[in-house]
Image 1 (cartoon, helix red, strand yellow):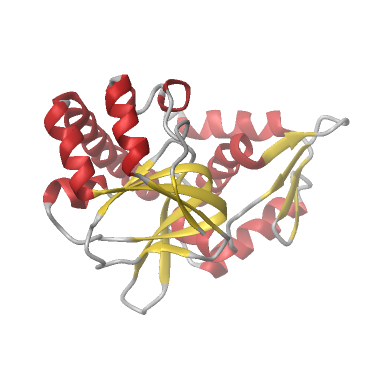
Image 2: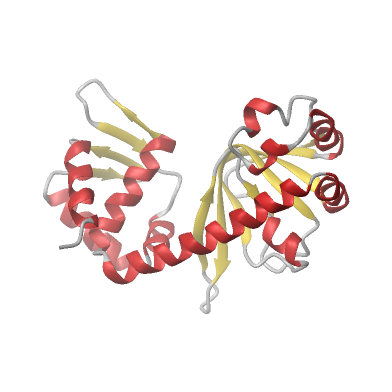
Length: 240
């Protein structure tokens, strides 16, 4: 269901630490008056690869996956977008089509700002465009880091590292000190993010389960000793 954004859709508290934090109260009002909010259920597409870029999408709540179609027609998960993240700024600034699609992984509310309204903000506040250009440069650096980890770090370390990242978004510590998570990702998604085949991930999961470190039941994950996994990551990230 679509609706005009409420006056509080974009507010100083929500945009703190994001590119939008440079907006003045009047510019925030302009965003709220022109943006359209919609709540998506898991599995729904926000936009598809090769769609025309008609504006920007600000994730208000939930979790969104950015996907790209591979040579075999499969959908590879590239990265995750969390509340406060903006999608579509690279193709908008470059005047291109979307190079990847966006699919909701966990019920999400997303605010869409049409291109013409965004252009008004870019003209009135050059700092906003500079912020998105900086984010683009940071994304390129992050891509280099991911490639480096893929070719140098063992798949086991990359997998454990991903789990520890996900704990901040969908995990909780229970009474006995263990970590409980409900992952919004499929095994195929996890494998694509690690740069390995699904079969290799299955073997890796069985290996770690056999050691008693982690227990998987569908998308439910229990980590008996989170500190032990953090220590393994720390050791794996330090080269001799």
